[in-house]
Length: 116
Image 1 (cartoon, rainbow, N blue to C red):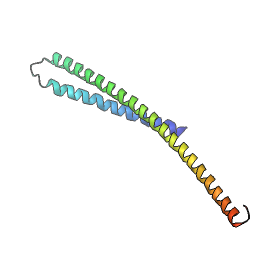
Image 2 (image 1 turned 180 degrees about the vertical axis):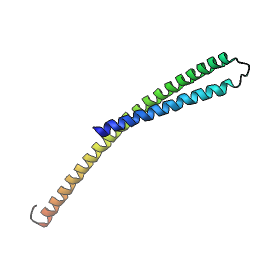
Image 3 (image 1 turned 90 degrees about the vertical axis):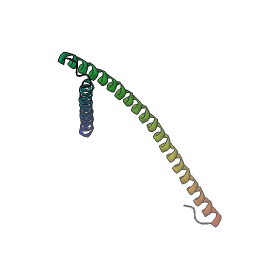
């Protein structure tokens, strides 16, 4: 139980740190973008930086949500494939055991050996 909570906490921390890096990148890109317009007043520059960073952040959030949904879809697909592979393996192992037992029984019958 504690390990699961620790893992969840680490995942949340990682997500938080990634998002903070994304916000920092958005602000830095906004500042870089605004440097192209030296004629802007300080107020205009701040407004443009703010809007640019907000738009960039919104795009990033949509992209991250889309990726997260796709990850869930892929996880579901692979879990189903893995479940089917395990089922096939069990069926094959059972069939191999039955065939081995049948071969042993036929060998015993053919050579008149005592039955197990």
